[in-house]
Image (tube, rainbow, N blue to C red):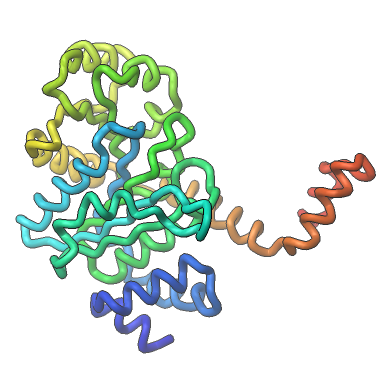
Amino acid sequence: MSELDQGVLAGDPRAIARAATLVENRADGWQQLMRKLFPHTGRALVVGITGAPGSGKSTLVDQVIRHVREEGKSVGVIAVDPSSPFTGGAILGDRIRMAQHHEDKGVFIRSMATRGTLGGLAAAALDLVLLFDASGRDVVLVETVGVGQDEVDIARVAGVTAVVVVPGMGDDVQAIKAGILEIADVLVINKADHPGAEKLERELHAATATPILQTVATEGRGVAELLQALRDKYRADRSARHWEQRLIEMYRDRLAGRLDPGAVAAAAEQVAQRKRDPYSIIEEWLH
């Protein structure tokens, strides 16, 4: 374990990959590893990028990576993909779209499967963010799976969150109704060269005071301004409030991990047969 944590702190890609697998699989020793790494975190700019499928999140992430690398800084990317129904692993769609960076030693891309987790994130995403932070990455980007209105968990993981919408896909109506507006530190109208971009911006301005930027990710237009806006927001709002939600999520994850799957299955059978009520069972588990 000491070799592994030293490798991560030195930024060794093999050590980072091994540690990421250990953490994601919740294998023996992952908590001890994270305890050692945590004092070395808190330096990276952690950006969450979320939005509806088809809004161009992966292309936008790709352009942000390019800008950060042009500055001479390193990047870690967590691309949360849907799970394969056969293996439970990540389908790797986002990673394929970022393939141009795979030989760049300053970019580490990790695909994660949601494994049935709701809210667009895998359960171990926060731990991987901290892992990449400890490894010395200057910027950590977390791109979610793109599940729409339920995709709010990213705000509990990232230091600053960009919500991506596009004109002409119903996002103007959906975004105003959805809870994702509330988690946005920056709203991004991508594909701003499409008809309806100005109308969408007016409607969003009427619905929220959140900063709004227009981008055309395929051309790299507006990406430098977006990166600056994210940095400005991050610097202006570095507080303990993010850790309040993070601690609650970590606590919930640990509690769920302590439940015996066999006992849960047996309890579910009893509830289904109306032999017991779920409230009493949960109260017993809490005690």
